[in-house]
Length: 165
Image 1 (cartoon, rainbow, N blue to C red):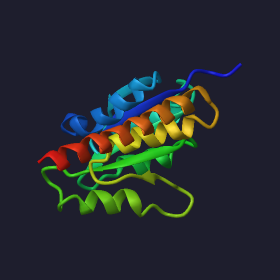
Image 2: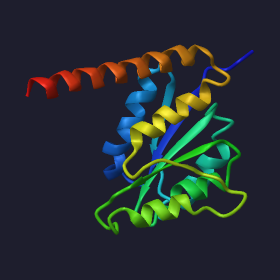
Image 3: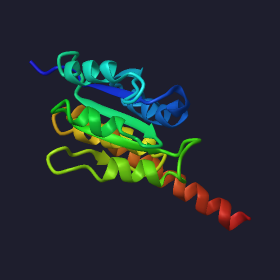
């Protein structure tokens, strides 16, 4: 019997939530269950380890991890689980224009992969999570097709606005 998919969205601090909320909104719009939690690799390392090690047992299928600054959360979580981890680099108040976050998540050592989306790319992380889940949950494929069609419609609306302006 196949389980319903579940995506965890974690972040280093509540200040990351506006970016991560875009992932949450998209995943929820696809009808997939969400678990959202603040988990800091630096301030709550034991909580992070417990979360990562127990995620599979909690029914989680994919982890989306957002972090700013040194951005160790996605990589540390990936080192503690075999679940797919999608990293979202976040431009934070102590960031070097976001490059520190991008490189910290992107440059993982061999054997510890983290899929990485663009700086502040919460929505793309949600889309990628649903694409991965659609491999074993074909009911999500039609929802992705509908989403893609809506993007085409948005472009056509934009073109009409440009032509009128």
